[in-house]
Image: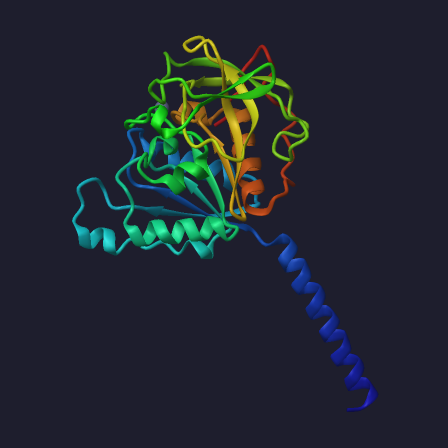
Length: 293
Ligand code: ZN
């Protein structure tokens, strides 16, 4: 090899390396959004969840739709999402139990470091699937009681695990409510106003579950339960990170700027452990909700 060829080769290698590292830095986060069954209009909410993520330019979102309720076994056998092809899975699913093989894959995926984001009624799913309930920390309805685990709420800034008997999961009439951020050091909530008004939503209360390794970042005071109910949670499950928000009932809820920001940052954190997505300049205040199309 003469000197010129060597220099050309060295330059090419250097360029190749720098392109590779730049490429890795800016590589979009791969999101798998699962829907297909829900007691909510998932056909209306999935596009809004996707759009909230897409608008940041940080994500590449694919949607995997399960077979419908009552579908034959061969339809379920054909639904085999490859979770490991994604950095994070986001569930907008509340329905029948996934097949054993899919559940095993999903458990392994999160255990081994995959991210998971649970939105609103996704925490109603799978009362009988222990690993799922350990991932989401707490959930509601579908027969959940004190046997599912403690009712988790916040009192004087601290988590309370209430083991007294009762049903898991309830809500009153929908209304706007103030989200109280109690952890402003976590990457998801860093810089977020400590009190901001969320758009009209169902305020879930009395959620129950294993409640292991749960850190509550924000709560809202429920007039129905009289308690401070978790609204943003992070959960460690194996090597995986889980972000869980019980907010997000309907299309109008998902237009809340505060919700969108929460979703974007929670999803980035679940995928990477970091948050680079800035908060928008205009944000809901303690007095006024703020929505955008
Ligand atoms: Zn709802």
